[in-house]
Length: 352
Image 1 (cartoon, rainbow, N blue to C red):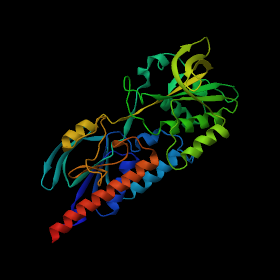
Image 2 (cartoon, helix red, strand yellow):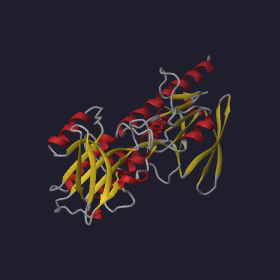
Image 3 (cartoon, one colour):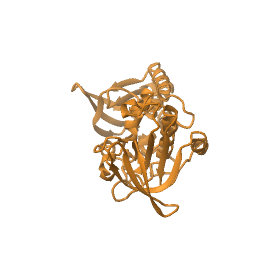
Image 4 (tube, one colour):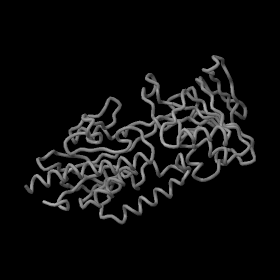
């Protein structure tokens, strides 16, 4: 039996899933990529720029879509896995699409690249998102950054506005959110803050943070440039509440370095939400007979195989924990390599 006789299922059409599918196809395996949404790209399709280079998210995504289209991978959008049974040779999987068409396919391995979803920042009622005009989530701001202006938020280029970012909304909060740090929020808020300063040169931009975690190549430098070149102000603090004023917002906080209370009048308050595991992870884990960690992410039980969740089941990208776009692609490639090594071993042992 050759590689072309083996089919691999990739679940999720974000950057990690597309990279895994492309590399598996290039290695000679038959690939079926299933994406629940109507289009590929995952969360990356909603971004304007990427950190720390500031390059265009859409240009990266277009290149990855082009590469995938040139491969032989079978792509099914608007589809999801609804059943799976384990066999000696792999899995018998049932896939259904938005039109109600159901198909049964036989696969030798599966890669879960299910991505993530954002925490609903409206659950922190003290900040007023969804209640007060001028309080938005980071992803709501992102949609305006993609357009290249903030006029839709009532902020014109000539206006000397004050913008406040509140970090860790839903992260590092075991009572109302998630106990874990979502890893990339500090940096994506830093990137957004710098873009706001570009679009509104006369603005004053503040970031209210617990701790700045700028881990990763070029990230500390990017954060330092935000303060020194973009003149973004960082305040170590605990924001307590946002109050509406006649035309502005009043943010009350505790300065945790000085141990003193403070207030800031702002025109826009941006809530940086946590990254949560995909809600479909639990169903998929049950279907394929693997375990998730306590937070709902795919995980490995063997540190020597970090992207293997179980027999014939692999994962990549934010399916395993929050990652940035570069890490998602790296893990997609790594998961493909792990699948190739595993299936090649089976093929070789069969041929002996």
